[in-house]
Length: 61
Image (cartoon, rainbow, N blue to C red; front, side, top):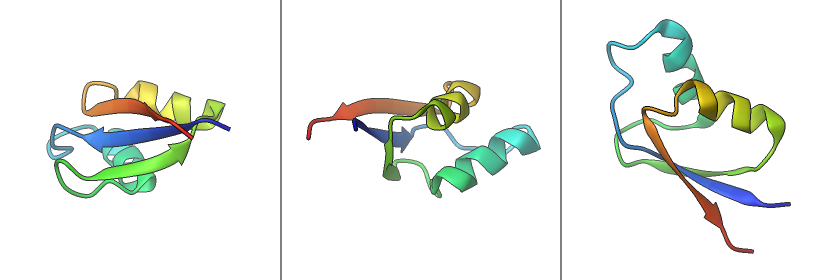
């Protein structure tokens, strides 16, 4: 399965509570923090809601 590298590039402070919870659930804490998550429908749905805060790259296996 493909992997996605997700990097927080804008702060989640002063955002909607739902967006802050998504950022926290993905494991992103500070600006420039990155996590690797599987490319699934659930992950894609969460990323769509905070697309303006993150940068997404596909990781080569």
